[in-house]
Image (tube, rainbow, N blue to C red; front, side, top):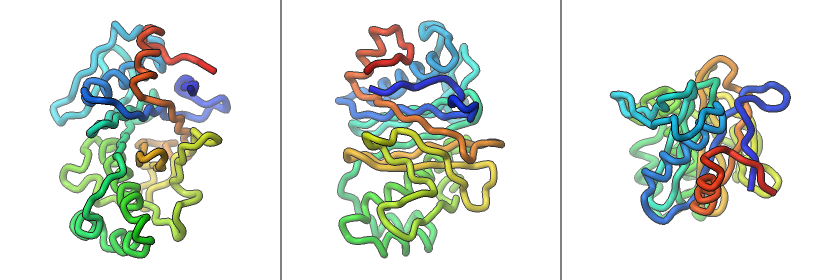
Length: 240
């Protein structure tokens, strides 16, 4: 289990806190629970005093605490992000069989579709989702998701090698559960990081001065963790 600390790293760097996990049903409700748990932990406001609401455009907002949040859910997967410093975005996708070529040509920039085509056949699904989750997260950080091309039109870093190293590489491994948000080409106040592990592809983004270089910390968001947090009153806690 991982510790998710407050709104700044030990060196004073602003941070974005993220939870990612698998669940068996009730994905929307469980992602909402992750959001409230992160908000409570970051602001020290008791969870029972917080309420998750949505703006007119669908953006999630926590009533009762000064914190920026984002949520994502799909079949069997959930994610949440929160920061006291920046508007944030998060996205998670399960790796699954999809028509990568058709989707890339339809929705991505030409250079991005060509980049995916250059990957080995068994790498293309993850590579596509790696780009897609970044665009979704960036769109959410801008307050629009993918609506109107806010996310899809954003250029992101295209690494020469795969799997990527450096840039927006946010790999979830035994040795690395945190990373720095990387710059978005042509958008100086936007930053993003993405990674993949255990059949999941995920990304986190932030918007604002100082977002580039901000620390991202990832913790688990599965059902076992939800039960633990419930016993702890919704607060983010240390475990071994």
